[in-house]
Image (cartoon, rainbow, N blue to C red):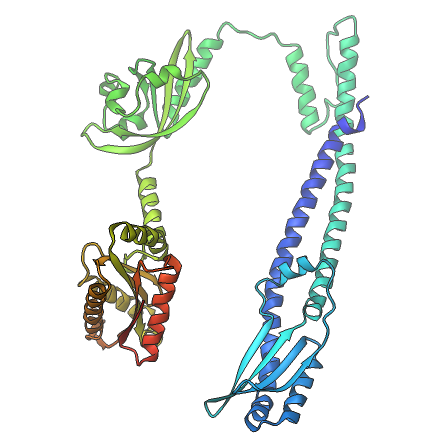
Length: 526
């Protein structure tokens, strides 16, 4: 008798239980992740709601420098138990009130810290009075309180899920034993007794023959095979007939060639795909249809080894198109043949090219996107260092675009972005690269401006002026006259301690400075 660990029902139940537990773990982690996302949003919403409630009182305290009122506000915040630190300071940074309390560390602090990753734990609110900054309110969340409900709720969820999974596994263990292992073991015992019998019975009878499930089918099939002698004289003819039927009924292009490449047979789909009639196609050899795959490869294949590869086939009119070939060496009689199932993948190639384009180019303006820029910028900086050139990066952000997009709709906004892209490209040289990195933000990369800093500044300034004048001209979109402007931040490279990230950051910072200076201008940073 088989040991328990070797019994089929035990193995089935064991692996099923493992899969169920694994699924339960993954499901629990997914549930916890989704719950934490919702909990995080709820925490941030509640925190800001609390701060907005006491905002007026805190503003009055900071504006009047009323320390008693400030202390009352801070004390009220601390009574919520969600904060372990709160303070109010005036516009000069002088502390008006502050309250702290000790925070008890949670169990497995590193797990808690990883859960809290991404949650805003310190909130800073600027206090304004009639548009003027009068002070600052600063609070810090207490992770112990914030995570208390979340941890208890999810511990209950995980415990419930795992208990349910374990009970389900036990039920499956019993079910597998009654429905699979026990009937199978009875069948094995009967076969074993048959093996030990000295005389071969004239008729086999199994207890499970009358069953309508797989065991009944297995018993009846074994009985039929036991009393049937195999007839092998016509096997080859039957096999070849079946092969012919499959070849000619297939919906894919099928070619049968010998190992020297001569085509022996084909189906109607092959004639249609290659634009030949069958008689003409059977006069050709494989190299006339596929000139990329050498015949030597056919002779290197092992029989039964299926290989899938891409190549190019040639139609009767000379048109070359890509195909996917599923090839195999089959034996018919004593000869070996190459059987190829061919599929036209022209559309798939076009789809792949389109996907590659969308990965590195903006679908709206057809300009390079942020990914392209990030991949390209390091090479440009490195090349500029090698050749001794100074390049520039212009960060362009459209002024008033959001107002147009919101008031006139996204279709008008998209049309406007397309026209903006065209105007940005007009004055650029062949070596320059213009990219749209998101929304109404564009970047112009000038790899080789000049060999001196002064000359580089002059050239990039001239280009910035040209771009500003071009973008402030009227845009006519769907019959409407639209006016925008742009703010441009300029950063030069390569300079000391410059790399891809800080070049973009410097240009971005300079662009915001240009906006603060009144927009429709540029700001230069080195």
